[in-house]
Length: 133
Image (tube, rainbow, N blue to C red; front, side, top):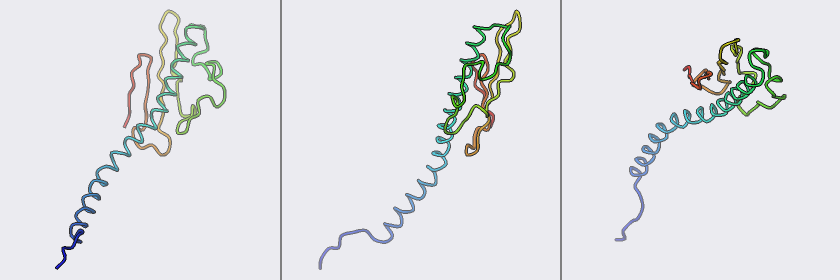
């Protein structure tokens, strides 16, 4: 009698079950990483606006137009347009430089469609990032 080589049906089904369990665990973890990668674009945009606010504050001081417009900050149309985020989703209306005081600002960006968590991230003048779930 010849020896048969190969896997039995039960062995193949066990392997398929193990792969399915691993996929069920890995997919939610990967989705969280995808959102974090998309948010990195939003954080970069916020950092760019923060740098421009500090430069504008250093140049104009308290006599500047607070909060400044994009043109006053030195941006042109399309400069802050990425794949997932645009400047229209950002808010820095609280930027202020009072006479005798220091420059203060809070830049806030809401998550666009397609990003689940966090729903909002803010950056303040001290460099503190706050995520709102």
